Length: 139
View 1 (cartoon, rainbow, N blue to C red):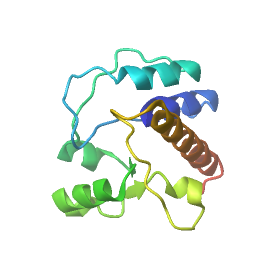
View 2 (cartoon, rainbow, N blue to C red):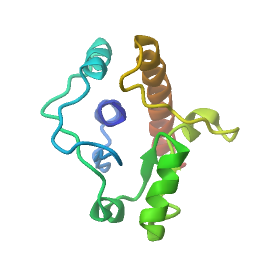
View 3 (spheres, rainbow, N blue to C red):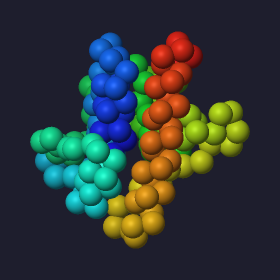
View 4 (tube, rainbow, N blue to C red):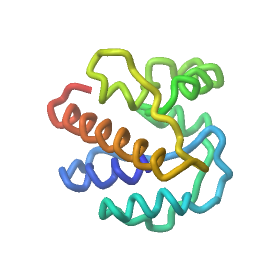
């Protein structure tokens, strides 16, 4: 979901110098997106085209200038796998909290509609704040 929301915001602001890739730590490569997440994205006016899940690799981590994760445990795991990427890993929730305690954005997979709406709201707020900072040169 975060990838789709970020792609949408990047397109809205014509940020052609930002390249986005999405991968998970526990993803089943080649799996289609979660139908509940697709439904919530469609409600936002964002369609998903040919999305398949992939698992993060060292090459992905090396390629990225910034690795946004939803949960602190994910940041810890990535930094343990590839210590050289420390400093590139950030919690997406940081862009909501504005310097306060940073909360995880909990993966709603397999949970209720409420949890999907909560994650959707948190992700959308964080992405919009992130893009605003990019536009201001503050990332």
